[in-house]
Figure 1 (cartoon, helix red, strand yellow):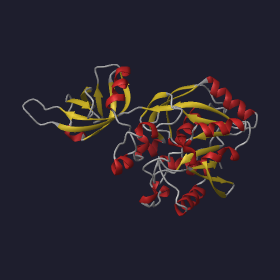
Figure 2 (figure 1 turned 30 degrees about the horizontal axis):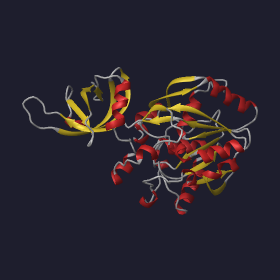
Figure 3 (figure 1 turned 90 degrees about the vertical axis):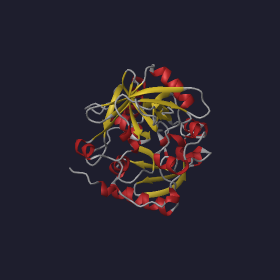
Figure 4 (figure 1 turned 135 degrees about the vertical axis):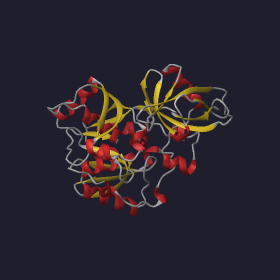
Length: 356
């Protein structure tokens, strides 16, 4: 079955793109769609749409300040330095990191780049490496732990490109672009549906007898990149690394056995859990990479509901929610959200939807 991304397009007024999150996280608006009806609510009231014994799953990845700025040092017989911006993606081998770099065309294999930050005396030096496929990498002569420690001092939070373009980075991003329960370092984009949850919301879930637990998927910068033709043909996305413990896998399987519902908070959580399911529909312990693309023809084996933000046009995430809840229903939801001034994208509002 071929996929036409034009089927997942829509027009959004710029005023509805949220550039900052709500200070009171759980006050974010939540559109609830179930059995064809649409209800306008708030995240703070999510427990009223769930039942005792239901299991809510969150992604506890921690975003690292992976966006760094610096200069390509002058080459031999040249006095010209070039400003460079990079977002580190993944350590592909010891000391070697794949990265999104600008300006890519002005970098050659073997170039020396020094990254720093105004107000900090520390810097990170890296050697540019280019593959035969023209992919670009940065080689650091320090350990991963040392690199992470330096990033805390000179790196910026990798906020979405459409946010950075309008307002630039902010010191508040270090807390605002991080969940309140972030634990395992490794993401270069936040699991944004989880940004809505605070201690009050978790307290409400607990009081109502609704269970919750955590998995880890390190969200990659590919979440902001356009879907490629190769990805559509292969039905495989960029690699992202995740972990589902045996304890959580057992929790999920027991909830399903008891006839309770499993609710994924965020598309990252949904993709990870569905990647951990075996041929018999049982969730197993998982530790590795997933490239799962959820699109037409896919049916969730585990998750009954999904809490997710409103996504970019023509994105794999919009295709995912359309597959999960129904294409026409999602079109109706987005129309309703726009008409009712919901805020969109990473710092925006969210929706709670059921699997069709």
